[in-house]
Image (cartoon, rainbow, N blue to C red):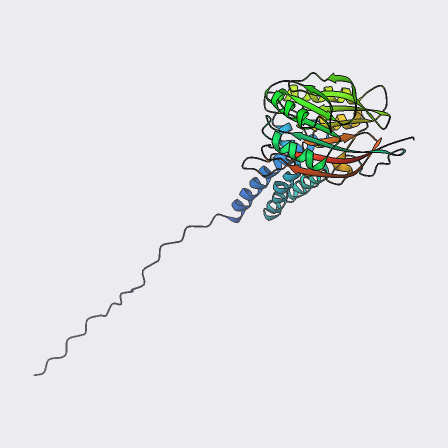
Length: 346
């Protein structure tokens, strides 16, 4: 008797697809926008502070004087702040960032008008060289530059006794007159002149700032070498006081031609420097030659030069024919070479 076939065992299907581990959740879009907004705000802090101090005509306290030297370059973080604020979709922040960028750009415009009408006909052509030889290390290079360029007036900062002797000896015939502060290190300074010098004076300062009156084409011209302390942390007060003494020397009761040159340790973005221009009705020769943003410092070290702190300032008795900036091997400053015309009545 045939047996019935046994029922087939139920077939159970086993799935081979195992669930994949879940991917970590990406940060919510709102969280990313918040981080972007914070980054934009941080980028805007320094440009806002420094451009505000420039607009309100104050040098403030450390670190404001130091950061004012970087004012034009602060447009970079301000511009990045605008982009990040827009990416974060924060309208108020984006508007604030645009305002800060505009304020930074406006504050970086050259100070004072460029077109100045000088009175009178040209009386004499005067070439002026202002140089900081950095503890006399660039003395030899400066001697070569003077021989090559043949200036009639040379203002030399950080020129010690040996430097002063080398310069006066080398140019005993071409620049026989001089006024100086004979000292060691950065204190020494010398003013060499092809014109007779009288009425020598020294502005009291930590570093030498001699001055004198030169007779040029029969006109007495007041000359002053400038070399105040740098605005290092802890000496911003003395820096302001010494710039104030230069300002007082510029504000003379007797009007007449005035020329102040040297290492001012200040740029056009510092209120204390602008006060000197205003007190003596002076113009920066670099501004008149459309070169007021040409950096002169630092010429040594890891950073490229980023600020102009070496200047030739002239009263309206002078017109500027041209200006050049010379590299001096051994110095952390560029020298300033200005070609001027002294004007007046014949």
